[in-house]
Image 1: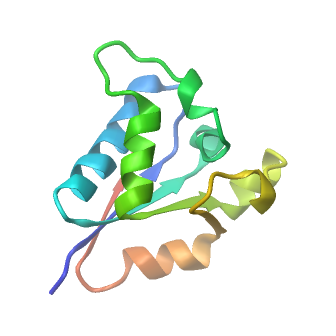
Image 2 (image 1 turned 45 degrees about the vertical axis):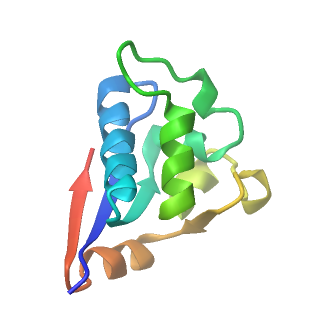
Length: 120
C-alpha cells in the first residue's frame, strides 16, 4: 500500500512558524519519495500566486519559494476554491501546476486508503 501525505496549510504571514512547518513537512516528504498533496487554504492561499512566496521571511527557515518548488516538482499543490474566491484569485492568477479545488476533492484525498492528513 502506498501512503499519501496530505498537508493542509491554513496560515501565511499571519502565523509564519505554522506556515513554514507545513511547507517544510510537505517538501521533506516529497524529497523522501512520499506522495504529497499540499493544500493552500486561508492566508496561505496567497502563496499560489507568483512572487508571493518570495516575500515570506522567517529566520532559520528554508526559503518558502524553494519548499513550494519542491512540492510542485514531486507532488500536487491545490488552492482551496473558496479561499481563492474570497481573495479574487483565479486559475489565470496561479503558479503553473497549482490547481484549484474544493472540499469534495480534499475529503476524497484524506479519506483514501493509506492517506495521512496533517493540518497546520
